[in-house]
Length: 503
Image (cartoon, rainbow, N blue to C red; front, side, top):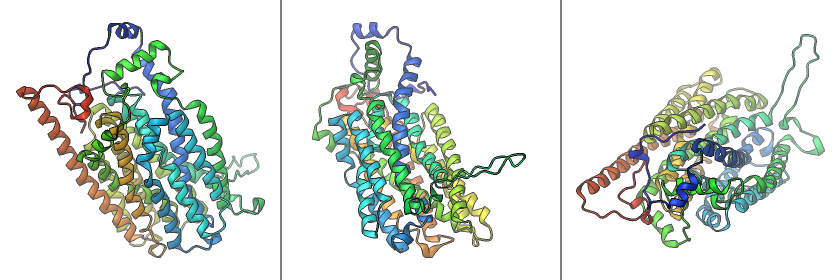
């Protein structure tokens, strides 16, 4: 879907010096809409597929738990939670460093390589024999996966104008909710043909492979999904493209036009050498920390839902196999809302109101879950609550993660801001892995209460960000009106008096 830029007075970037007449002449024959569609087909599906694999390979442990993982590895419920925690400790440990490596090495080598590495680790997770091995594999898996999402968000910001980035980031993140649905499908797939004149058939999923090669079903979940990741990672060396200037799927005229449209919009076409001062500029910017805090208040409910939804549904009285199947509809619902919110939010160039509204939608879900005092007798009520929770969390996260990609200028500063947002944000996930304890089943009062409180905090943080960004825009407008400050050059990025933040 192509989105036309609206409300240029609020979303426009710093205007650079005029383009040369040669560049303008070379761009005159390029159809903007066709070029954007060409970029979408070449760039977005590949990175979305890699992110789907990453979310699937980190959250399939929830499906594996129902198929006997903790029993076979002789782990208690709390030890299992420790394994989940160690993933996120590894995940947040090197994210800023990974984005710096991406800037230096380039996406075509870096993104497929880290995907291949975590695919191998996921496969090895299926061969784990004890708790210590599980802890080690989860930690290393987190380190490897930590380089993907902030890197991909930065990568997209180097191809698209500011007004075009949020929709693409939201499409990317919609893969997270799809991964939850795929996890349930792969763990349990049972299709029935018509009984009218046909023999009843069953197509069994990975979770039903117990006994194959002497392995329990949960091992095959990791092994098959890990091998699939490795195969796709190798193919990614061909379908992930380098930076725009080095791409081969664009003609010289199209490259010139991409450069021109980005130069007229933001810093994405600049040849910016790496400087530590730009890293420090991100760290010193209070707005960057607010973006990180906004995601922090969402990451806890996000990951507790994705890691514990099968257990939450199973605790309502459903069998493990049925619980796998029942995880699919809430994720499909969340995927649809994520894309819908992204489209409407992009058209209206508004972020805060949609994030806060989506978080409130999720708050309703947790209120439903907490208010059901006998979920085993009334499972439908709690199951309804999971729809509200998923349908509110995933759109809010998608919009929040796209905010720095739109509002932070200077390439290294933006790469650092994206990575810092994930690092600080996922500290919430570290906390979240410890609050859904087995002794709290079936109501999970502690887990649901903390998730609800985090969502309330998100509404507050997003409200503060709204006021800060709107205030910055008004301050700059006053400076321009008063003529009291000379116009800064584009190198000053989002500090430029002509830069307008999207809120």
